[in-house]
Length: 261
Image (tube, rainbow, N blue to C red; front, top):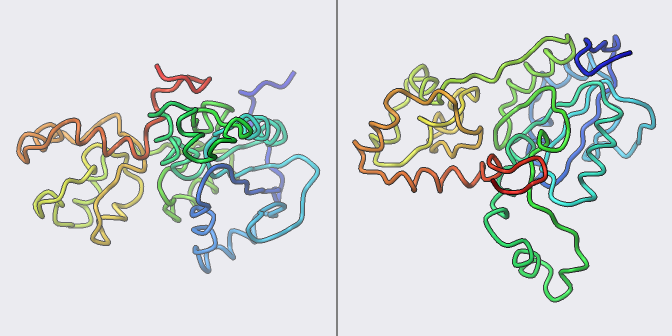
């Protein structure tokens, strides 16, 4: 009998589908922005569903599904479970799918209060649940962090998925990549940045372009050695860092039912 730990066999030209849940769909736009490399990718796979670019529906099982967005109501929970049941491999891509993303800020408030604010007096007619990233609802095989995703990482993860190889998200802070890219530290510019506490893997994309790191890739398990020194040196309040992280990472303390611990 086959178990979930058995190796996955991918077809010569795998059937790949893109789906979205609660999100801005910006990560799907990043797929379209890959440019010429996208043509090489499309030559290796058979895209059978992708709502943003095609209307066709596929009624068989998928080799790989790539999911954007977080789970925010019961309908979405049922839908993602049905997709998972039809897929050999599931890739969560983007902050909403990986950590709950900005949708997770909803979890800081009373759910009925949020529903009333959005839907008005008829709020009870509209289903809503605490925000959850995909891994709190279904089994996720690969995760691509970021808001939006970093296109080279998507290509790398897809290659691993198609070959049945593991992919490990770097457990280094973004600061390590900033050093390699010879960026001037944002703290030296007088700006608070979440690079010392955020997972690398984006090639310090935001800082390379003059922006700060917002922590969209999630918290690194192995922060920069000088992370605590940064707080002291620049007179930062720890709650400031926590509040900044909450913008993308409010769901990390939720259990699999979406309840806050």
